[in-house]
Amino acid sequence: MALDTLRGRFRQYRFPPLDAETAQPHPQDDEQQHLALVAEHQLQLKEGYQEGFKRGLEEGQKEGHEQGLRQGTEQGFNEGMRKGYTDGSLSAQKEGQQQFALASKPLDGIAQQVNDYLGTIQRKQRDDLLQLVEKVTRQVIRCELALQPTQLLSIIEEALSALPSVPESLQVMLSSEEFERIQNVAPEKVSEWGLTPAATLQSGECRIVTDTSELDVGCEHRLEQCMKTIKETLTPEQKDA
Image (cartoon, rainbow, N blue to C red; front, side, top):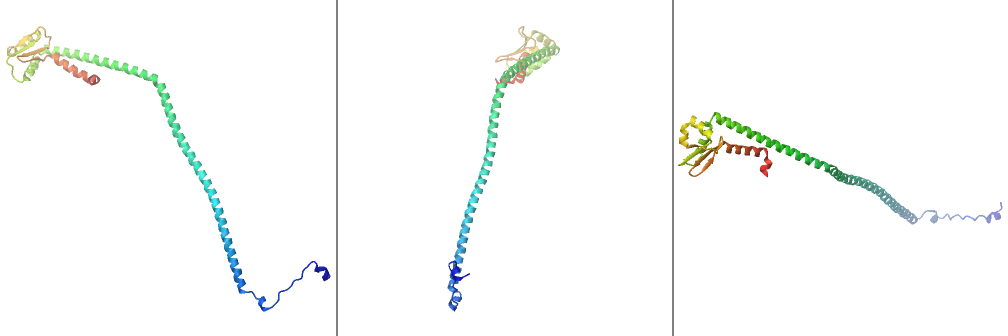
């Protein structure tokens, strides 16, 4: 190929001169090149650090947001479940109590009627028992006084010993039946105590009359006291009333 033909397509290369000054590298150029490389390396490190920090921050924010959202959702769900269970339980209990009270209202009336009926039966049983005890006691007293009339003398002697002083005048009134029995078994007491029959007194009754007082020491009075104590024991509600 002719040189003229290639001249328009290529350009000539000129080799640098081979003198000593240009053939060896200059120390100042090497130092500048080294500084440029260090600066470029530091710039790349800085850019890489900033890029990594930015990416780490974005990923951390994204991960923290997802984790916070997940924990918040779970905590909200659990809290909602607890609150819902508590509110539901209280509401169900309240509604159940209202329904139970409404359903048991007729039973309250029936229970009250049953209690009243049972109370009436118990009161009647107590009254019947008291009447039976009083009736049996009266019969026992009559039999004892009929068989052992001196027991009434023991009651009279006990009442006289309870007096603060010996009375100047003394009169003991008995029923006609007791007076006759005592007169037969202990005539000395008739004159000592001034025993006197009284038609108004029933069997077992006794009155001690002194110059300052009158005492009822008969069996009837003692029986009333005993029956009162028994009645208060069997019916404490009447005592409280």
